[in-house]
Image (cartoon, rainbow, N blue to C red; front, side, top):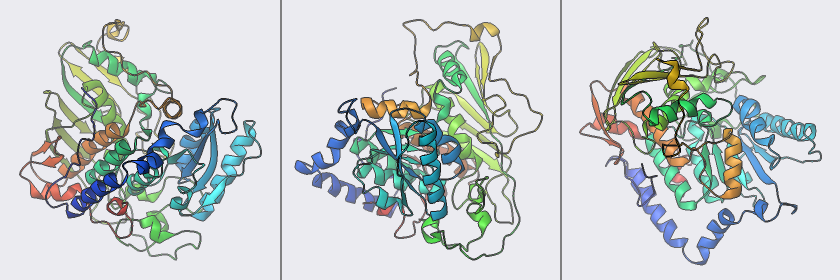
Length: 481
Protein backbone atom coordinates (compact mmCIF):
# COMPACT_ATOMS: atom_id res chain seq x y z
CA UNK A 1 0.00 0.00 0.00
CA UNK A 2 1.31 3.46 -0.89
CA UNK A 3 2.21 5.69 2.07
CA UNK A 4 -0.31 8.37 2.90
CA UNK A 5 0.46 11.95 1.90
CA UNK A 6 -1.26 15.13 3.16
CA UNK A 7 -2.82 16.36 -0.08
CA UNK A 8 -5.42 18.41 1.75
CA UNK A 9 -6.81 18.81 5.26
CA UNK A 10 -9.25 16.11 6.34
CA UNK A 11 -12.36 17.43 8.08
CA UNK A 12 -13.84 14.83 10.40
CA UNK A 13 -17.56 15.59 10.37
CA UNK A 14 -19.62 18.77 10.34
CA UNK A 15 -19.68 18.98 14.12
CA UNK A 16 -15.98 19.79 14.29
CA UNK A 17 -16.22 23.57 14.09
CA UNK A 18 -12.89 24.01 15.84
CA UNK A 19 -11.22 21.62 13.44
CA UNK A 20 -12.59 23.61 10.49
CA UNK A 21 -11.13 26.73 12.05
CA UNK A 22 -7.83 24.89 12.40
CA UNK A 23 -7.88 24.00 8.70
CA UNK A 24 -8.44 27.62 7.69
CA UNK A 25 -5.62 28.68 9.98
CA UNK A 26 -3.39 26.03 8.46
CA UNK A 27 -4.11 27.21 4.91
CA UNK A 28 -3.19 30.71 6.00
CA UNK A 29 -0.04 29.33 7.63
CA UNK A 30 0.99 27.51 4.45
CA UNK A 31 0.51 30.66 2.36
CA UNK A 32 2.68 32.62 4.75
CA UNK A 33 5.44 30.02 4.63
CA UNK A 34 6.16 30.33 0.91
CA UNK A 35 9.34 31.86 -0.49
CA UNK A 36 11.85 33.05 2.08
CA UNK A 37 9.60 32.09 4.97
CA UNK A 38 9.70 28.44 3.92
CA UNK A 39 13.48 28.37 4.24
CA UNK A 40 13.15 29.42 7.87
CA UNK A 41 10.99 26.37 8.62
CA UNK A 42 12.34 23.78 6.22
CA UNK A 43 16.09 24.33 6.06
CA UNK A 44 16.84 22.93 9.53
CA UNK A 45 15.13 19.68 8.49
CA UNK A 46 17.20 19.43 5.31
CA UNK A 47 20.63 20.24 6.74
CA UNK A 48 20.61 19.71 10.52
CA UNK A 49 23.71 20.98 12.28
CA UNK A 50 24.80 17.57 13.51
CA UNK A 51 25.31 16.11 10.02
CA UNK A 52 27.56 18.86 8.69
CA UNK A 53 30.68 16.96 9.69
CA UNK A 54 31.68 14.12 12.02
CA UNK A 55 34.47 16.16 13.54
CA UNK A 56 32.45 19.35 13.97
CA UNK A 57 31.53 20.45 17.52
CA UNK A 58 27.87 20.17 16.53
CA UNK A 59 28.04 16.54 15.41
CA UNK A 60 25.81 15.40 18.30
CA UNK A 61 22.05 15.33 18.00
CA UNK A 62 21.02 17.71 20.77
CA UNK A 63 17.87 16.42 22.45
CA UNK A 64 15.32 17.99 24.78
CA UNK A 65 13.19 15.74 26.98
CA UNK A 66 9.52 16.76 27.46
CA UNK A 67 8.12 15.01 30.52
CA UNK A 68 10.32 13.21 33.02
CA UNK A 69 8.46 10.27 34.54
CA UNK A 70 8.79 6.50 34.72
CA UNK A 71 8.77 5.97 30.94
CA UNK A 72 11.34 8.70 30.26
CA UNK A 73 13.64 7.46 33.01
CA UNK A 74 13.32 3.72 32.45
CA UNK A 75 12.97 3.60 28.67
CA UNK A 76 13.07 6.65 26.39
CA UNK A 77 16.15 8.41 27.76
CA UNK A 78 18.42 5.40 28.35
CA UNK A 79 17.56 3.85 24.98
CA UNK A 80 18.28 7.16 23.24
CA UNK A 81 21.29 8.47 25.12
CA UNK A 82 23.21 5.19 25.01
CA UNK A 83 23.80 5.98 21.33
CA UNK A 84 27.03 7.93 20.84
CA UNK A 85 25.42 10.46 18.49
CA UNK A 86 22.79 11.56 21.08
CA UNK A 87 23.25 14.29 23.67
CA UNK A 88 20.56 15.20 26.21
CA UNK A 89 20.74 18.97 26.76
CA UNK A 90 17.38 20.01 28.24
CA UNK A 91 14.42 18.70 30.19
CA UNK A 92 10.96 20.14 30.77
CA UNK A 93 8.20 19.05 33.13
CA UNK A 94 5.20 20.83 34.62
CA UNK A 95 6.38 19.36 37.93
CA UNK A 96 9.57 21.36 38.48
CA UNK A 97 10.87 18.80 40.97
CA UNK A 98 10.70 16.15 38.26
CA UNK A 99 12.40 18.47 35.79
CA UNK A 100 15.27 18.96 38.25
CA UNK A 101 15.46 15.21 38.81
CA UNK A 102 15.60 14.81 35.05
CA UNK A 103 18.54 17.19 34.84
CA UNK A 104 20.44 15.21 37.49
CA UNK A 105 19.56 11.90 35.83
CA UNK A 106 20.69 12.99 32.35
CA UNK A 107 23.93 14.56 33.59
CA UNK A 108 24.77 11.43 35.58
CA UNK A 109 23.97 9.18 32.62
CA UNK A 110 26.27 11.21 30.40
CA UNK A 111 29.03 11.19 33.00
CA UNK A 112 28.70 7.41 33.44
CA UNK A 113 29.09 7.02 29.67
CA UNK A 114 32.10 9.28 29.20
CA UNK A 115 30.25 12.52 28.39
CA UNK A 116 31.04 14.53 31.49
CA UNK A 117 30.54 18.27 31.82
CA UNK A 118 27.08 18.42 30.22
CA UNK A 119 24.93 21.18 31.75
CA UNK A 120 21.28 20.27 31.15
CA UNK A 121 18.83 23.16 31.00
CA UNK A 122 15.63 22.93 33.06
CA UNK A 123 12.18 24.22 32.07
CA UNK A 124 8.73 23.97 33.62
CA UNK A 125 7.10 25.04 30.32
CA UNK A 126 8.30 22.98 27.35
CA UNK A 127 7.29 25.77 24.96
CA UNK A 128 10.19 27.85 26.25
CA UNK A 129 12.51 24.94 25.54
CA UNK A 130 11.26 24.72 21.95
CA UNK A 131 12.52 28.26 21.37
CA UNK A 132 16.12 27.09 21.80
CA UNK A 133 17.39 26.82 18.23
CA UNK A 134 20.37 24.71 19.31
CA UNK A 135 18.04 21.80 20.16
CA UNK A 136 17.65 19.43 17.20
CA UNK A 137 15.03 17.02 18.49
CA UNK A 138 12.69 16.26 21.38
CA UNK A 139 11.41 13.16 23.12
CA UNK A 140 7.82 13.49 24.35
CA UNK A 141 7.07 11.18 27.29
CA UNK A 142 4.02 12.92 28.73
CA UNK A 143 0.50 11.74 29.66
CA UNK A 144 -1.69 10.84 26.66
CA UNK A 145 -3.61 14.14 26.67
CA UNK A 146 -0.29 15.95 26.21
CA UNK A 147 0.94 14.03 23.13
CA UNK A 148 -0.45 15.65 19.98
CA UNK A 149 -0.07 19.31 20.97
CA UNK A 150 3.66 19.32 21.86
CA UNK A 151 4.38 17.13 18.83
CA UNK A 152 2.75 19.73 16.57
CA UNK A 153 4.52 22.60 18.28
CA UNK A 154 7.88 20.83 18.09
CA UNK A 155 7.41 20.20 14.37
CA UNK A 156 6.54 23.86 13.77
CA UNK A 157 9.65 24.82 15.77
CA UNK A 158 11.82 22.72 13.44
CA UNK A 159 12.49 19.87 15.89
CA UNK A 160 12.46 16.18 15.08
CA UNK A 161 10.17 14.18 17.36
CA UNK A 162 10.03 10.89 19.22
CA UNK A 163 6.52 10.52 20.64
CA UNK A 164 5.40 7.98 23.18
CA UNK A 165 2.30 6.04 22.18
CA UNK A 166 -0.60 6.52 21.73
CA UNK A 167 -0.40 9.26 19.13
CA UNK A 168 -3.30 11.29 20.51
CA UNK A 169 -6.22 11.57 22.89
CA UNK A 170 -8.75 11.83 20.03
CA UNK A 171 -8.86 11.05 16.32
CA UNK A 172 -9.25 14.75 15.49
CA UNK A 173 -6.04 15.56 17.37
CA UNK A 174 -4.20 12.72 15.65
CA UNK A 175 -5.20 13.97 12.22
CA UNK A 176 -4.03 17.49 13.04
CA UNK A 177 -0.73 16.22 14.39
CA UNK A 178 0.04 13.93 11.45
CA UNK A 179 -0.78 16.67 8.93
CA UNK A 180 1.52 19.19 10.57
CA UNK A 181 4.39 16.73 10.91
CA UNK A 182 4.16 15.83 7.23
CA UNK A 183 3.86 19.42 6.09
CA UNK A 184 6.90 20.56 8.06
CA UNK A 185 9.00 17.58 6.96
CA UNK A 186 10.28 16.80 10.46
CA UNK A 187 11.45 13.29 11.32
CA UNK A 188 8.84 11.65 13.55
CA UNK A 189 9.01 8.29 15.27
CA UNK A 190 6.05 6.80 17.16
CA UNK A 191 7.02 4.75 20.18
CA UNK A 192 6.02 1.40 18.66
CA UNK A 193 8.86 -0.72 20.05
CA UNK A 194 7.46 -3.95 18.63
CA UNK A 195 8.59 -2.80 15.16
CA UNK A 196 12.28 -2.86 16.04
CA UNK A 197 14.46 -5.94 15.68
CA UNK A 198 15.59 -5.17 19.23
CA UNK A 199 14.53 -6.07 21.85
CA UNK A 200 11.70 -8.15 20.31
CA UNK A 201 12.66 -9.36 16.81
CA UNK A 202 9.83 -11.90 16.86
CA UNK A 203 7.27 -9.24 15.85
CA UNK A 204 9.11 -8.35 12.65
CA UNK A 205 9.49 -12.07 11.89
CA UNK A 206 5.80 -12.83 12.50
CA UNK A 207 4.63 -9.92 10.35
CA UNK A 208 6.90 -10.91 7.47
CA UNK A 209 5.69 -14.50 7.58
CA UNK A 210 2.04 -13.39 7.52
CA UNK A 211 2.65 -10.87 4.72
CA UNK A 212 4.25 -13.61 2.62
CA UNK A 213 1.40 -16.09 3.00
CA UNK A 214 3.07 -18.64 5.26
CA UNK A 215 -0.28 -19.29 6.96
CA UNK A 216 -2.22 -19.04 3.70
CA UNK A 217 -4.86 -16.35 3.31
CA UNK A 218 -5.20 -14.33 6.50
CA UNK A 219 -8.72 -14.68 7.90
CA UNK A 220 -8.77 -13.48 11.49
CA UNK A 221 -6.60 -11.66 14.04
CA UNK A 222 -7.00 -12.12 17.78
CA UNK A 223 -5.47 -9.51 20.08
CA UNK A 224 -5.21 -10.06 23.82
CA UNK A 225 -5.25 -6.94 25.99
CA UNK A 226 -5.73 -6.60 29.74
CA UNK A 227 -8.30 -4.31 31.29
CA UNK A 228 -7.81 -1.94 34.23
CA UNK A 229 -9.37 -2.23 37.70
CA UNK A 230 -11.42 0.56 39.19
CA UNK A 231 -10.50 2.52 42.31
CA UNK A 232 -11.83 4.41 45.28
CA UNK A 233 -13.14 7.94 45.52
CA UNK A 234 -10.34 10.37 46.38
CA UNK A 235 -10.65 13.61 48.34
CA UNK A 236 -9.37 16.97 47.08
CA UNK A 237 -5.81 17.82 48.06
CA UNK A 238 -3.69 20.95 48.08
CA UNK A 239 -1.82 21.34 44.80
CA UNK A 240 1.92 20.96 45.45
CA UNK A 241 3.87 24.18 44.93
CA UNK A 242 6.19 22.39 42.52
CA UNK A 243 3.37 21.43 40.13
CA UNK A 244 1.75 23.66 37.50
CA UNK A 245 -1.54 21.80 37.80
CA UNK A 246 -3.42 24.14 35.47
CA UNK A 247 -1.01 23.29 32.66
CA UNK A 248 -0.91 19.61 33.62
CA UNK A 249 -4.69 19.42 33.04
CA UNK A 250 -4.09 21.11 29.70
CA UNK A 251 -6.95 20.98 27.23
CA UNK A 252 -9.13 18.80 29.48
CA UNK A 253 -11.79 20.12 31.91
CA UNK A 254 -10.78 21.42 35.30
CA UNK A 255 -11.04 18.84 38.10
CA UNK A 256 -9.83 19.18 41.67
CA UNK A 257 -6.31 17.97 42.40
CA UNK A 258 -5.68 14.68 44.11
CA UNK A 259 -2.39 12.86 43.86
CA UNK A 260 -3.89 9.68 42.43
CA UNK A 261 -5.30 11.66 39.52
CA UNK A 262 -1.83 12.85 38.49
CA UNK A 263 1.44 11.16 39.48
CA UNK A 264 3.12 10.18 42.75
CA UNK A 265 5.06 12.97 44.41
CA UNK A 266 7.63 10.74 46.08
CA UNK A 267 8.43 8.07 43.48
CA UNK A 268 8.05 7.13 39.83
CA UNK A 269 5.55 4.30 40.14
CA UNK A 270 2.54 3.86 37.83
CA UNK A 271 0.63 7.18 37.71
CA UNK A 272 -3.11 7.40 38.33
CA UNK A 273 -3.91 9.38 35.17
CA UNK A 274 -3.54 6.15 33.18
CA UNK A 275 -6.86 5.03 34.67
CA UNK A 276 -8.76 8.30 34.14
CA UNK A 277 -10.72 8.70 30.89
CA UNK A 278 -10.16 12.43 31.05
CA UNK A 279 -6.53 11.81 30.07
CA UNK A 280 -6.64 8.59 28.03
CA UNK A 281 -8.73 5.64 26.92
CA UNK A 282 -7.19 2.94 29.12
CA UNK A 283 -5.58 -0.27 27.96
CA UNK A 284 -7.25 -0.17 24.54
CA UNK A 285 -4.73 2.54 23.65
CA UNK A 286 -2.14 1.54 26.28
CA UNK A 287 -1.20 -1.95 25.12
CA UNK A 288 -3.54 -1.61 22.14
CA UNK A 289 -1.39 0.98 20.36
CA UNK A 290 1.35 -1.67 20.25
CA UNK A 291 -0.65 -4.75 19.34
CA UNK A 292 -2.93 -3.12 16.77
CA UNK A 293 0.15 -1.60 15.18
CA UNK A 294 1.63 -5.10 14.91
CA UNK A 295 -1.61 -6.35 13.38
CA UNK A 296 -1.68 -3.50 10.86
CA UNK A 297 1.95 -4.19 9.92
CA UNK A 298 1.23 -7.83 9.18
CA UNK A 299 -2.07 -7.08 7.41
CA UNK A 300 -0.66 -4.31 5.21
CA UNK A 301 -3.26 -1.87 6.58
CA UNK A 302 -0.89 0.70 8.09
CA UNK A 303 -2.52 3.64 6.30
CA UNK A 304 -6.17 2.75 6.78
CA UNK A 305 -8.39 1.17 9.44
CA UNK A 306 -11.43 -1.03 10.06
CA UNK A 307 -14.67 -0.51 8.16
CA UNK A 308 -16.99 -2.15 10.72
CA UNK A 309 -16.69 -2.28 14.49
CA UNK A 310 -18.79 -3.24 17.49
CA UNK A 311 -17.86 -3.68 21.13
CA UNK A 312 -18.98 -4.14 24.70
CA UNK A 313 -17.16 -3.20 27.88
CA UNK A 314 -17.60 -2.75 31.61
CA UNK A 315 -16.86 0.63 33.16
CA UNK A 316 -16.58 1.47 36.88
CA UNK A 317 -19.73 3.08 38.22
CA UNK A 318 -17.91 5.04 40.92
CA UNK A 319 -14.44 6.03 42.00
CA UNK A 320 -11.69 8.21 40.56
CA UNK A 321 -10.46 5.62 38.06
CA UNK A 322 -12.99 5.09 35.29
CA UNK A 323 -11.32 3.59 32.19
CA UNK A 324 -12.71 0.36 30.77
CA UNK A 325 -12.34 -2.98 32.51
CA UNK A 326 -13.19 -6.25 30.75
CA UNK A 327 -14.16 -5.76 27.12
CA UNK A 328 -14.65 -7.35 23.71
CA UNK A 329 -14.21 -5.72 20.32
CA UNK A 330 -15.03 -7.17 16.91
CA UNK A 331 -13.85 -5.34 13.79
CA UNK A 332 -13.70 -5.99 10.06
CA UNK A 333 -11.31 -4.57 7.47
CA UNK A 334 -11.91 -3.90 3.78
CA UNK A 335 -9.58 -6.79 2.85
CA UNK A 336 -12.03 -9.20 4.53
CA UNK A 337 -9.92 -9.83 7.64
CA UNK A 338 -11.78 -9.79 10.94
CA UNK A 339 -10.21 -8.70 14.22
CA UNK A 340 -11.16 -9.61 17.76
CA UNK A 341 -9.72 -7.80 20.78
CA UNK A 342 -10.33 -8.97 24.34
CA UNK A 343 -8.71 -9.63 27.68
CA UNK A 344 -9.89 -13.24 27.40
CA UNK A 345 -7.10 -13.85 24.85
CA UNK A 346 -3.42 -14.21 25.83
CA UNK A 347 -1.59 -10.88 25.80
CA UNK A 348 -0.27 -10.87 22.25
CA UNK A 349 -1.37 -11.15 18.63
CA UNK A 350 -2.59 -14.35 16.95
CA UNK A 351 -2.87 -14.46 13.15
CA UNK A 352 -5.20 -17.15 11.80
CA UNK A 353 -5.00 -18.10 8.15
CA UNK A 354 -6.41 -20.71 5.79
CA UNK A 355 -3.32 -22.90 6.31
CA UNK A 356 -2.31 -22.33 9.94
CA UNK A 357 -1.70 -19.74 12.62
CA UNK A 358 1.08 -17.67 14.18
CA UNK A 359 1.09 -16.21 17.69
CA UNK A 360 3.51 -13.46 18.74
CA UNK A 361 3.98 -11.69 22.07
CA UNK A 362 6.63 -10.20 24.32
CA UNK A 363 6.75 -13.48 26.17
CA UNK A 364 6.44 -12.83 29.88
CA UNK A 365 7.67 -9.23 29.64
CA UNK A 366 5.27 -6.45 30.69
CA UNK A 367 5.29 -3.00 29.10
CA UNK A 368 6.54 -1.76 32.45
CA UNK A 369 7.06 -3.60 35.71
CA UNK A 370 3.99 -1.95 37.23
CA UNK A 371 1.51 -2.84 34.47
CA UNK A 372 -1.30 -5.27 35.38
CA UNK A 373 -0.56 -8.87 34.40
CA UNK A 374 -2.10 -12.28 34.97
CA UNK A 375 0.14 -14.19 37.41
CA UNK A 376 1.11 -17.68 36.37
CA UNK A 377 0.54 -17.08 32.66
CA UNK A 378 3.41 -18.37 30.51
CA UNK A 379 3.50 -16.97 26.98
CA UNK A 380 5.69 -17.98 24.08
CA UNK A 381 7.33 -15.09 22.27
CA UNK A 382 6.68 -16.75 18.90
CA UNK A 383 4.62 -19.84 18.15
CA UNK A 384 2.86 -21.42 15.17
CA UNK A 385 0.53 -24.25 14.27
CA UNK A 386 3.48 -25.96 12.55
CA UNK A 387 7.14 -25.36 13.59
CA UNK A 388 8.10 -25.43 9.90
CA UNK A 389 6.29 -22.11 9.43
CA UNK A 390 8.73 -20.35 11.74
CA UNK A 391 11.75 -21.80 9.91
CA UNK A 392 10.56 -20.64 6.51
CA UNK A 393 12.99 -18.50 4.49
CA UNK A 394 11.78 -15.22 2.96
CA UNK A 395 12.89 -15.24 -0.68
CA UNK A 396 14.63 -12.31 -2.40
CA UNK A 397 11.52 -11.45 -4.44
CA UNK A 398 9.08 -11.67 -1.52
CA UNK A 399 7.94 -8.92 0.85
CA UNK A 400 10.78 -7.74 3.10
CA UNK A 401 9.58 -5.39 5.84
CA UNK A 402 11.79 -2.54 6.99
CA UNK A 403 14.33 -4.10 9.34
CA UNK A 404 14.81 -1.40 11.94
CA UNK A 405 17.12 -1.52 14.94
CA UNK A 406 15.84 -0.54 18.39
CA UNK A 407 13.17 2.14 18.00
CA UNK A 408 15.13 5.08 19.42
CA UNK A 409 18.26 4.16 17.47
CA UNK A 410 16.17 3.96 14.30
CA UNK A 411 14.88 7.47 15.04
CA UNK A 412 18.41 8.82 15.48
CA UNK A 413 19.50 7.15 12.24
CA UNK A 414 16.57 8.76 10.44
CA UNK A 415 17.47 12.18 11.84
CA UNK A 416 20.93 11.80 10.32
CA UNK A 417 19.79 10.37 6.97
CA UNK A 418 16.50 12.35 6.72
CA UNK A 419 14.82 9.11 5.68
CA UNK A 420 11.48 7.89 7.02
CA UNK A 421 11.79 5.75 10.20
CA UNK A 422 9.84 2.57 10.83
CA UNK A 423 6.86 4.24 12.59
CA UNK A 424 6.16 7.68 11.06
CA UNK A 425 3.35 9.99 12.11
CA UNK A 426 0.60 8.66 9.87
CA UNK A 427 1.32 5.05 10.86
CA UNK A 428 1.17 6.05 14.54
CA UNK A 429 -2.06 7.94 13.97
CA UNK A 430 -3.72 5.02 12.16
CA UNK A 431 -2.78 2.52 14.87
CA UNK A 432 -4.10 4.90 17.50
CA UNK A 433 -7.30 5.68 15.58
CA UNK A 434 -8.14 1.96 15.31
CA UNK A 435 -7.88 1.82 19.10
CA UNK A 436 -9.97 4.96 19.53
CA UNK A 437 -12.81 3.79 17.27
CA UNK A 438 -12.80 0.60 19.36
CA UNK A 439 -13.16 2.74 22.47
CA UNK A 440 -16.03 4.68 20.91
CA UNK A 441 -17.73 1.39 19.99
CA UNK A 442 -17.59 0.39 23.67
CA UNK A 443 -19.94 3.30 24.37
CA UNK A 444 -22.21 3.37 21.31
CA UNK A 445 -24.50 0.32 20.97
CA UNK A 446 -24.68 -1.74 17.81
CA UNK A 447 -22.43 -2.16 14.80
CA UNK A 448 -20.66 0.99 13.64
CA UNK A 449 -19.55 1.60 10.08
CA UNK A 450 -16.29 3.52 9.80
CA UNK A 451 -14.96 5.29 6.72
CA UNK A 452 -11.16 5.26 7.18
CA UNK A 453 -10.60 7.62 4.24
CA UNK A 454 -12.86 10.37 5.58
CA UNK A 455 -12.20 9.35 9.20
CA UNK A 456 -15.88 9.52 10.01
CA UNK A 457 -18.61 7.11 11.09
CA UNK A 458 -21.33 6.57 8.51
CA UNK A 459 -24.80 7.73 9.58
CA UNK A 460 -24.06 7.82 13.31
CA UNK A 461 -23.98 11.29 14.86
CA UNK A 462 -23.49 9.94 18.40
CA UNK A 463 -20.27 8.17 17.42
CA UNK A 464 -19.01 11.11 15.34
CA UNK A 465 -19.41 13.45 18.29
CA UNK A 466 -16.77 11.37 20.10
CA UNK A 467 -14.11 11.89 17.44
CA UNK A 468 -13.06 15.10 19.17
CA UNK A 469 -13.40 16.70 22.59
CA UNK A 470 -13.89 20.35 23.57
CA UNK A 471 -10.51 21.88 24.33
CA UNK A 472 -9.98 24.21 27.28
CA UNK A 473 -8.36 27.44 26.08
CA UNK A 474 -5.48 28.21 25.80
CA UNK A 475 -4.44 24.55 25.67
CA UNK A 476 -5.09 22.06 22.88
CA UNK A 477 -4.25 21.30 19.28
CA UNK A 478 -6.93 23.68 17.96
CA UNK A 479 -4.99 26.62 19.36
CA UNK A 480 -1.50 25.65 18.22
CA UNK A 481 -1.64 27.86 15.13
